Length: 135
Image 1: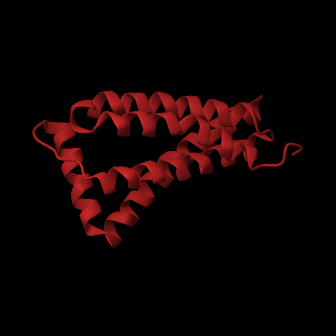
Image 2 (image 1 turned 180 degrees about the vertical axis):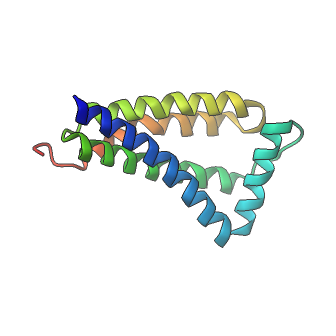
Image 3 (image 1 turned 30 degrees about the vertical axis):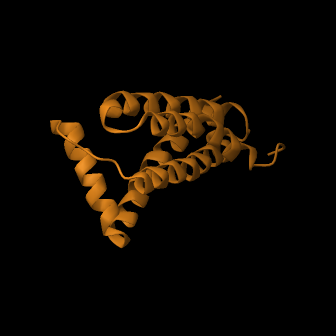
């Protein structure tokens, strides 16, 4: 049980670290991404107008998928099992995704909210399944 809890914690924290790190790297190599991110963060903090770029939104969906797979994989690896820990990580990511959707609802199209939030749980489970069933 302790390994499952540790796996969930590590998987969730890894998701946050990898997400932020990759966003910083993408912003450094693709300046338009960084400008878009900064404008989005500013409008979330202070309100105002924001026009989302579809390419940036699709980039976030792909990034969210990859990072969720990594989080599920790490959770399963540490937990020593590939079902409960990735599922719990996925639930936590889903809750965080819903919170993000609520915060950014007026600024981003509904299709983005639905897709981004919907991928978090299944991709974490897929990441867990990448670990052999018999660990």
